[in-house]
Length: 551
Image 1 (cartoon, rainbow, N blue to C red):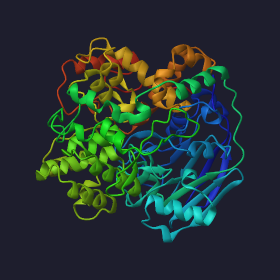
Image 2: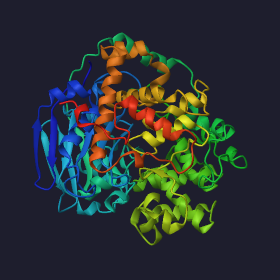
Image 3: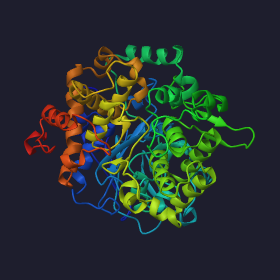
Image 4: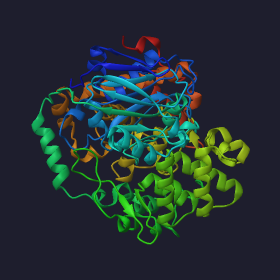
């Protein structure tokens, strides 16, 4: 089975030391990316570790396709114990970092311990250098990039950076790369910030050689991405805003409503496209679905907003002005915040104060959260920890704020939220795509468990490879087999092992069936959970038996 090559680089930022370890057996069994990082995190982070303490570790990793020239491979993975969910979280980001990371020759970089001063850590194929950067305290993401470029000729595409939100350990702070691309969910920016690491750079000339079993198929996928028309090439993920609104699946007014009929035209794909001023993409990807946008009247430029930001800072806050959403997006990128969790948390506050639609207040709150100033210090904790104090519904699952695909309408999506190890994460299975497209009836849970399990397993394979989720239209079962050099069922089994490792880690931290819950009632959910655990081979309490784990 196809897998990445290269040693594990472990960096102790407290001792200012580094070492390499061969992990060939792990690479062979877990492919790369999320799979390899999950195995390492499971075995090397203590089950009782404090997410913001020195015992937590951050893993950055690529997969075998970051050595290729295939479209949809300009991404990489980050994994750590989440300060938001208190469980293991993996997230990935696009841009141009992944090839620069691969050029160091390492398959995975592990950042351990805690520094006593603010550091920039420079990783090359010759080793690691540590730079004290007290002058970058509370610098924005782009300010940090500019400084690293001036001092070391290291541009934004070589960096993983935390903004002020990460330094202030906001529980949903993002890791940022290429200034506007986010390792968004779960607060991994706060983990690196707690280690007193401002930025990590990657450069070298030692990219490993990985032979794709059928390189002709990789070429066909690249050609398809370049030549076939797709609305996402013009509107990115915002191309689906109107569909979601029409299907009563666009959360609005802090989830009190499920459509935004009075304001959707101000934030939909056509409106976003009207602000797009050039093409944007990730490394070697011909699909080019990114959204560099500019408002001529104000001069505001940003990348995006994508659909989830349109939901979280648009409909869910009752904002129908795309420029306001663009401003929120840009603030989150500069300060290093996950736009979903930030927007939903602000929505909880607006609900408690009856201040929906107040763009000036929204932008003020984004900054207050990043710097933990005033009420921002409370909101920096996330909805799960503050909903009682605000007197609002807890719109999270496992502590992770809900995205913009409404499980009250898309019932398979709801089951996916409940069972995902990361919590309310739409990317964990993308079950909603089948329900939006009518391939699966949105209503009810009958027959959906096996479909969901296979989707979750497949998405792990993609995150381990690492292949963008938007490649789905170009990847058949046969193409997976040709690219990986193994049969499709073997790939799904590998994905299942990784899901099980995540679950086992979380079980050791106290997670079980009682955490697989939703903030709304869903008929048949308990029976579906029974079926899900049976399908996975877990106990009726949602616990992985010790005998299930591979050596």
